[in-house]
Image (tube, rainbow, N blue to C red; front, side, top):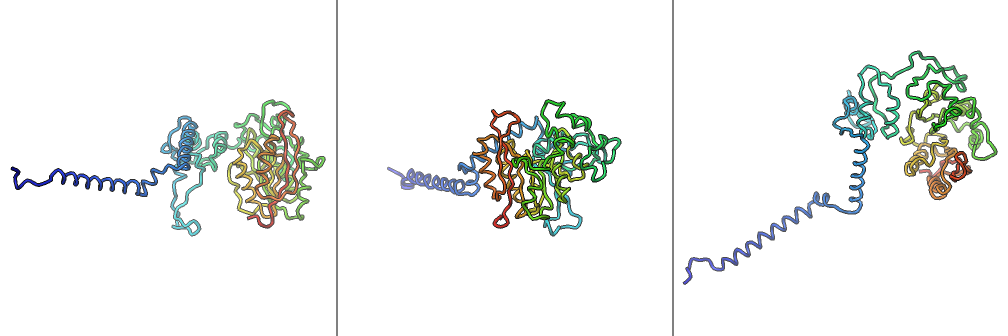
Amino acid sequence: MESPHKPKHLSSTFFFLFIFISSNLVTLFISTSLFNPCALTTTRTDNNAITTMVEKKLFDEEITRNNDGGEGEQDLPDEFMTLTSPQKLPFGVNPNSKSDKIISPVGKPCTLFPNELKRFMSYTVNGSCPDDELLAQRLLLKGCEPLPRRRCRVAAPETYVEHHPFPECQWSTPSDSSIVWTAYTCKNYSCLINRRKNQKEFDDCKDCFDLQGREKNRWAETIGGGLDFSIDEVLGVKKQGTIKIGLDIGGGVATFAVRMRERNITIITTSMNLNGPFNNFIAARGVVPLYLSISQRLPFFDNTLDIVHSMHVLSNWIPTTMLHFLLFDIYRVLRPGGLFWLDHFFCIGEQYEEVYKPLIQSIGFNQIKWVTGRKLDRGPDLNEMYLSALLEKPLSHSW
């Protein structure tokens, strides 16, 4: 006989209690995992997110390979960290920046090459800088632009000789004693002037330093009405006196700027020192050099320049996407009605029709002159071609 005090249906009660507790635990798990905003962020698996994660991983791996076994950011040199640390403004919040701090601009890719950066930023404060022009330029060309500032004195020639006075300086070779030659194969200007005849290996702008050679006639006159536009021909498309200031991208030894100065037009020339003292030579001729690679945003405000010129440097050796950004940057700095002179752009014939012609025409310029021709200096089998174009930023609807 069963005891009257024993609970009835005890097993059923435990069963229903188990079901009740389990269902609540499941509900709690679902609510905290699937409907938590943080969980949604971390478990998102759409294609764009996956692609971004994969690209980032590949990029990080590539940077690791390129660092030559370099250390991480925590091992960056003290001078670099001192420069890039936020500095308190002495009078508090600045109304222009809306901040009480100022940070020195440095290209973020500098930190991707810590070994080279450490060599560049290792020096005695208030002492002499290392003689490291090649290292500095290598960092620039890797995207470390702008370079960090340094608190040291750059090397100068032991016995400096003044440049020729104006206007003689425009077509005269400076003294060898005006240059620190350690970064270059040639150790004097005579070597640079004659390297086109004496040197077989490639060098950038090999004949540029010979001011009495090909430079003497460059842009001076139109040759057969073809690819070689003259400066006077280009200036003739605008009202006299309206072209006053401009930029020459990759301008060699600035002969273009010198010719424009003869016409009372100010041209700034960008150039790197690729195995030659191009920037020093430009300054010695009495025009303005700008030590700047083609990858950096042009340091001019919107709608300010009357003309931008570039010969050879903007060609198919530049990645297409980078060229696209650069052409829009040229469009940006030109004022409405300003001229873009694309001088002897070169590419393969198939590239011209499929890539470069539609790319250049998509920027939004008006087309004033557009001339193509064969490029035969490396032989006809390569099917290379030149394009010389004179383009104008529209006066209206130029956004």
